Amino acid sequence: MEIIKGANIFILTLFVFLFSGLPIFRLFQIKDWLLSRVLADYFHLRGRKYILNKKDLLVILILFVYFIFPKIFFQIFYIFGLVFLGFAEFFSLFELNPFNLFIFLLLFPLIFLRRNILKTIKITPKALILFSIFFFLNFLFIYLAYIFHDFNYFFILYLFLLISYTQIFLFSLALSLFDLMVSPYLFYLRERVKNKLKNLNIKKIVIVGSYGKSTTKEFLNHLLKDKKIFSLPPRINHEYAIFKYLLKNSLQGFEYLILELGSYFLGNVRWVCKGIIPDFVFITGITKQHYFLFGENIKNIIYGEGIEAVLEMKKGKVFVNTSHEYFEILKKEIEKIRKNKEIEIVTYGKQGDYSYEILFSSEEKTIFKLNAKGEEHILETNLIYPPQIENLVGAISFVLEEKILSLEEINEKIKNLKMPKTFLKPIKYKNITIFDDSYNANLKGVLEGIRFLEKADFEKKIVIFNGILELGRETIKIYENLAKEFSKFDFTLFTDKEEYQFFKKILKEKAILIKNQKDLDEFLNNLKERSGIFIFNRFPSHIKLNLENEKNSLH
Image (cartoon, one colour):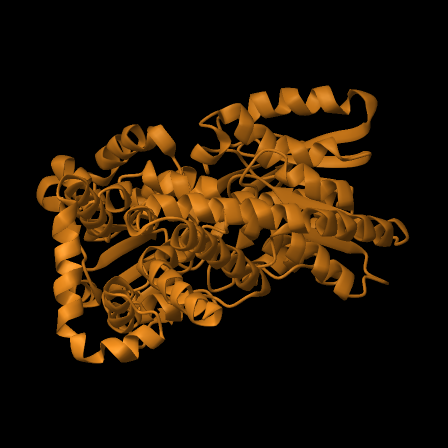
């Protein structure tokens, strides 16, 4: 009988998971298992979909009605039980009361309705462990209510478990338990990496910042390709994945190790760098990226996405981009750190030790003047997007500082840079040129893209805006300023209903909502003029650029 009772509780738990737990599980997975990133969505315009979702409202309404008219529900379950009265003896064998039976019958259509979300879940060891803890916590609460309380208490608790906010709390608890379990192992991995690197003659380059990290890493890889470099693949950026990858692979004989580190909270980068001990640090720039995650405090971002990497340096060079509004604060903080260390600051950007000025730009190439510590040189590259030129100058400053390449060698190497698919490249499609910058999702990147499109020569100029997340209470203010910038163009397309409604108040008929793939395809096909389209941030999963015979101008 205990087995049957356990099976009943399992079915009740499975229903809770599919009804409200699965969407929360998927949301946390999308947000890299970080509660702060999940909460950031609730403070965004899109948060209305979470706060006022119909499913939660329905459960709250049932709870409200139950507290006022409890007898109604007992009558419903009684009537439901009468329908299956002929099978009463059979159901009693499995201890299926009318409520359990009701949930059991609803389980099958619910599985069908959740099939699309189930398909999107990525099965990883971490996901399986977190699912097990999460499911067990729900099972435990249902079990305790089922065994030790009457139906009244059980029914109220069960309804509370069906609310999304309860599931967020339980999953946060599961995350905390998981962190307690794995933190000793992570520390052990970090110490193993530290000892491994200590015994190797390899120079360690760590790239941090709010934006431009991946581009800078790719340019360094390109300029250093004649050297023996070990650079981690793009998706390996979590501390566990980084350490496991470094331990799994032999680093013997490599001259340079290049790491790109993202940060979602204070102490994140510093903890990793304690195991790496960087020789060189790139700070590619600071902006209000992940603003909510850092307590809506720009000084926290400066530390979390910049300074923390420098704190663990013993000696070496820090390459700092000057072309952002927080450079002076950043420089002062680095100056404090380097007082008792052999650390040199090298600056690059619009100003600094290595500065640049764009002289000519077309759809095929850019010619720019590089001022390398007082010496001027003219360089040519197949890159056409100004922020990429800035990151390229950062990479150039490194190879010049370390005397790895001459300017003549650099000029040859940068004439035909190969960029990954995720980086901005012009895509030619019929009469349309599309600048797909969907990989980037930061405020500075959007503003740079606006300036670029504004100067471009097209009959029609269009923006596709998929939103910027994690801006916290700054969202409304930033979006109002962006709306004024978007008003310079012919149309701005939105893929989120809440964002569309917000921007439409300012943009009026220039704002267009793209609800599905058909809407986007029809819009593109109806463009007859020579048009330029700039895409900011990733499309939602049900929409994509569906272009036939498109041609990239960069190969």
